Length: 100
Length: 478
Image: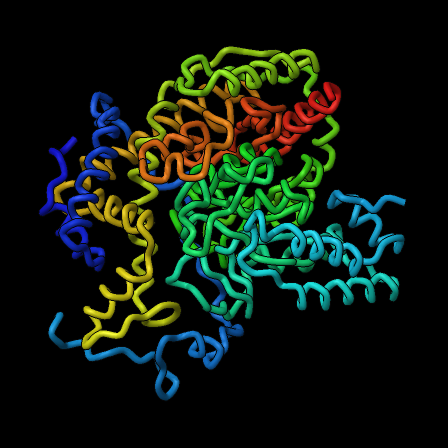
């Protein structure tokens, strides 16, 4: 298993996951995730090179439905649940800004 | 005349006209109104729509049509399954106030079968937890002892059945979230084969593991609900195309000549009171004519590690959708990236953030092979070990959980201790196999103990036969 998780690791994955952590949160996460990952070292001794990874229980192939028109969700009903909507579309703050 | 309390009894009475669906639903609503203030099983009670639906069922009976095998049966739904126009929160501030624009497939199937939804139940936020303490909207109490947890993550649905609010309910099970609360609340809980029940409209946690299944007061009721919700759904690409086998004949079948496996290398850690009941279950099945055989499942013990890498990894991906754009919570910010961060930081609770961080770490560049890739290989070992064990045994038995229900707060500050609650339930999810918890007496402080029956993929009929045999053995001891 990789080395012990660090403050920088936690700050990096928090950024990837778009979660804001203050310094106390980072310290707590390092301690908690460190303890959990330490427990997970039990699989380090296993010889796994020849074992095929298993992503899901059954081998599934992609299935395409018939290309026919069916009813879809009502646009107004969907947009009524959006935090913000303008002219039949989802609305968001500017994409280019201070955080970009 | 006493009114029926089982789902099968209520449906029979409603279909024959000897009891009205309205009365069945009113009784359920009265019990919820009288006692749920002490238990906290429900997040939403849908009294008005339930009364309307019950009246429609009575009208159907009066007009000579059959409303279905669950006619007039009040049912509670874990609040991570979409119900059109009814709040579906996942016990998260992220989805507080959200009204889904569609019904999950299980919801439409329950309605087709005549069931009446009386409310949505509490859970650990986004189904992440083993105690229902991680809900943003309050802790559910165990009806057997309100100072204890009901288990989780489907704690509200388990408690609703245990408290007698409803005869049956639905939960979801990613690593034990139906079976562990069933065990701790003394009710039957079933995780079906992966793909047996459509997940369309189930809010995704870990897509290669999640399954919907029933809670019930008895094995036969669980079978009727599972039959109603199972079967192929073109809307779920992981749904098994073959028809789901009927279970009714399995329940009374018995276990004569059946091979019940004892896992000789089962991870230790179960409390003595739990182990005592678990041993008694083998004795009961042997008395009923089963052969007890020893099997080995060496990789069983690595299930916890594989699960707590795979499930958070999938969750970190699934929960990326909560970005404040299309539905749910949004915290205003000057640009979209800042809005994503502010929304997610404010909307998710501590355990959800912990798992997103863990999962993102396990998937991140440089660590993928060491964590996620390795966990996927361990998952294969577990599936292969089960396959070998099932050449010697028809079903396997384990305790459902290592302990009886624990005190509220006892493990909430120790994630690892909480994760260990799932030691015995996780391997079935990794393999995609069915498993069920059946109440089998009591342990410390008179609290319920569950025994878990494991079966190979699509082995539900055999599993229900064993579950029912355990139930009959308990009935005979009373």
